[in-house]
Length: 82
Image 1 (cartoon, helix red, strand yellow):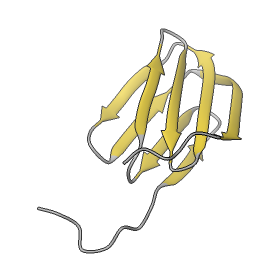
Image 2 (tube, rainbow, N blue to C red; image 1 turned 135 degrees about the vertical axis):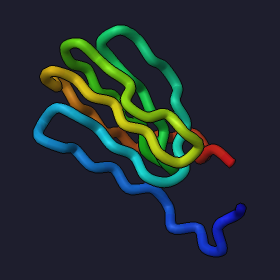
Image 3 (cartoon, rainbow, N blue to C red; image 1 turned 180 degrees about the horizontal axis):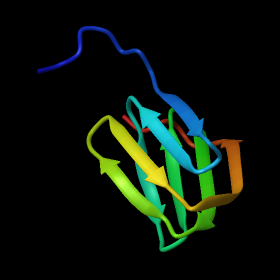
Image 4 (cartoon, helix red, strand yellow; image 1 turned 180 degrees about the vertical axis):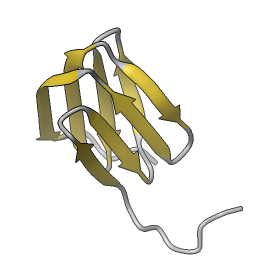
């Protein structure tokens, strides 16, 4: 089933432990303690202790850490993903 309207993405930081993405995104890199995600024209880099991927579906992703140590959001110069 396709969406009727493109609502974009939303990024939520919960309790300084998890990053939740609703909407279109692209997972660029994933390691034992970091995740790099592209949402629209932004690049999100989250680093922390003990990363667990709670959900990873087409339009929802939840990355949980015991503690987020670094969270960086940058405007990406590249074109947004299709």
